[in-house]
Amino acid sequence: MNRVCDTVPRKHQGEPCEEVGSARGRQRRDRDDEEGKPEKRKRRRVFESNKHDLASNSDVSRISRKRILSPDGRKVREKKKRVVEKKTPDASGDNPRVEFEAKYSELDPLGAGGCGTVFAGFRKEDNVPVAIKHIPHENLLCKPVCLNGKMLPTEVAIMMKLTAKKNDSVGKSAPVALLDWYDLGHELIVVMERPVPAVDLSTYIKRKKGCLRESKAKTIMKQLVDAAIGLEQNRVFHRDIKPENILIETGQSVPRVRLIDFGLSCLVKLGSFYTVFYGTEKYAPPEYCSSSVYRAGPSTVWQLGTVLYEMLHKKGFKTKRFLSKKLQISSELRKNLKDFLQLCLEEDPKLRPTLTELKLHPWLN
Image (tube, rainbow, N blue to C red; front, side, top):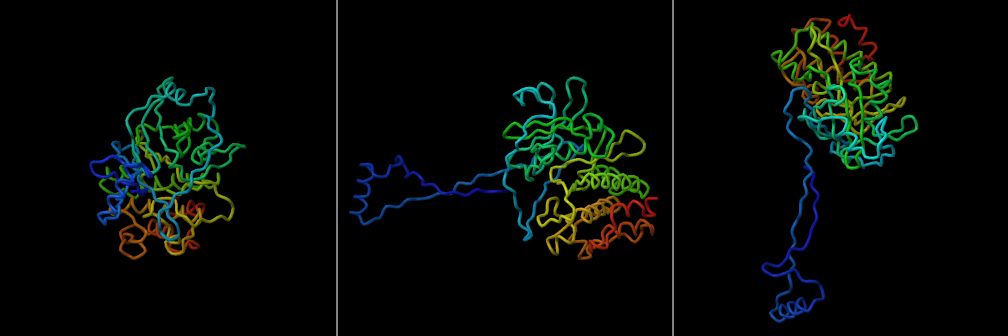
């Protein structure tokens, strides 16, 4: 819990609070001086709590708490930045709240985490299912970026970049499509495509008795590698690929992968590296744990490996336990599969394959 501590004077028991310099105050001080008792001023601490996490009541998307870690391992938060552009991509009115409520109906919450809360909903004009994400401004952890000459919230800018043209990407790309967004001043509302029926990969694994067959895991991993390559080509670093942020569409015989939650994503510059970890701590790459530096490509390959590990093992993955040999890759896995997983979970980032090399691995072909 984040706590803000301050001290304020407490009122004397049974008496009104006195102003400095008042007659009654001077009488009290004179009386105390005569009795040899110096005036005492009691102080009390006031704590404010800042709670963002709500319990999820749906298995469509379970959004887990995220951590942002500095090199010394402490949780940090970036200062809030002013967002210049505050209209929806096609906004025409002056009141974004009125426009949002006129266009969409909001239903039950799907999940919540450290950044915001996601609700199910639908678009009123055609009953298209949508996911509506509410993000308080103080939880916009990544600074705004410039896209097409406009300063936009990072999550909005990245989803715009991945959604080529409005509605063209709905149901067609691995990342869920952005439909609308609204800046209300105190919070950001992001309206996204909501695949139906679908569950997150974590729930999907649990429904399959805690682990998947190799054939099912391969089907999912092929799509994940292709999705990661697509992000890389658009210079997008998701930073938090994990089972809770992967939706599995279950309406067809072959499960289809969709990526969600770009709240901690960033746009990558050539040769850039990072010293503050944005993501889920237990999936952090080893290079961050050892030297507090990590890069986009090798980190994404590592996270794909952690996802594959959890698809094939009944135990949850934790980087520190894996590095200390308390978690082991099952010896029962077939040779090509085991080799693929070992390459993804290579401790030295320089020895990990690129995403393109992963795609050409014999296990996926």
